Length: 103
Image (cartoon, rainbow, N blue to C red; front, side, top):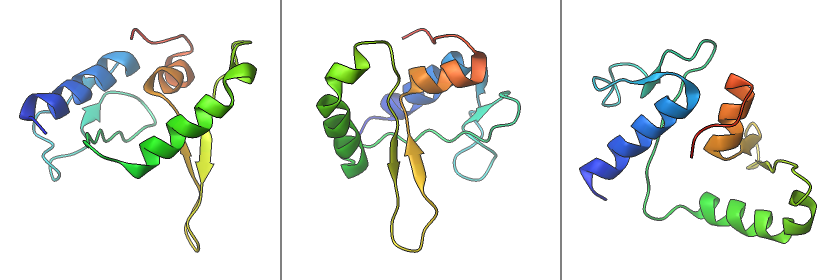
């Protein structure tokens, strides 16, 4: 994984959400993306990520339903843990900004 790939993800997320990348974050200096009121945002770039594979597979199964402009979210839960929701950055930007993000 290149240094540039994770920085690009942070910049893309900040731009889409109307915030700014926090170059001082590095895991201890605050969140990766700042300036989005009401949110603490971390951006993690991984070459392999099983959750990503699951999300994309389930979304592909729902292709027909998504043609009408609906958005897709994957809700997962591990035993004894709080459920998690996974959505695309574009859909999240829509929730935060009230309009579609730039891809």
